[in-house]
Amino acid sequence: MATPSPAASSRSEFACFRVGLTGGIGSGKSTVADRFAELGAAIVDTDAIAHAITAPGGAAIDALRAHFGDAYITAGGALDRGRMRELVFADAGAKRALESILHPLIRARAEDAAQHAAENVPYVMFVVPLLVESGNWKTRVDRVLVVDCPVDVQVERVVRRSRIDADGARSIVAQQASRERRLAVADDVLFNGGAVGQLAERVARLHATYCRLASLRRDRAG
Image 1: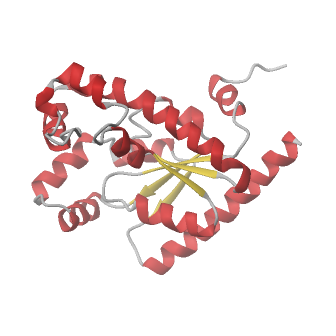
Image 2: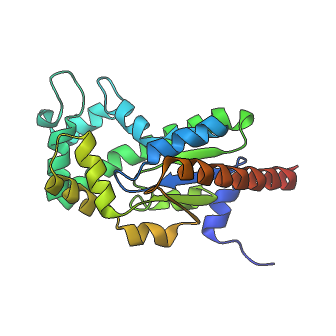
Image 3: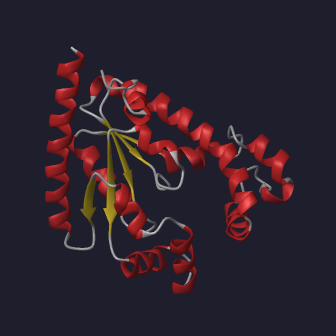
């Protein structure tokens, strides 16, 4: 009998069918996730979890204060995201330290949310902006869906919604995994650089696929 791969063994621990949705900043992950939610998927947004644990009184604040100092905590008791962003862009060691604090907490809360949702939905979709960069997320999902668009479109969207210029937006894009690297790990790709109507149709087709795969998973388990 063949020995299952580590990734397959890890995924087999989870009863529900799991999709990891990722994409670069400005690719439209939230828009896509909202459409999947409308169709019945349970959405676990790791970025929302990250904001919650770094808000005043959040689970990560004490560890962040202890490691980085009061200078990186606002007067209101939240993580100073702007100052921290500047630090980790310039210091790879600080970036690793930040991730070592946040990532375990995010994963634990994401798993808890998924377990609570799994009984009532066809599948769970984890929205993970840094799925490629954070290493083991790919082993924790059955499919990886990449929301893709050209870099120029990413930059245009970031400039339009944020208080930064095009150079600043390109700097943020450059800090993330490249478009090519994300596409290399994708099981499914949803191009989000065209018409809204086309996006809705593509989401509906993928939703039908994931529901079918989830049903097959349940049949095997039962």
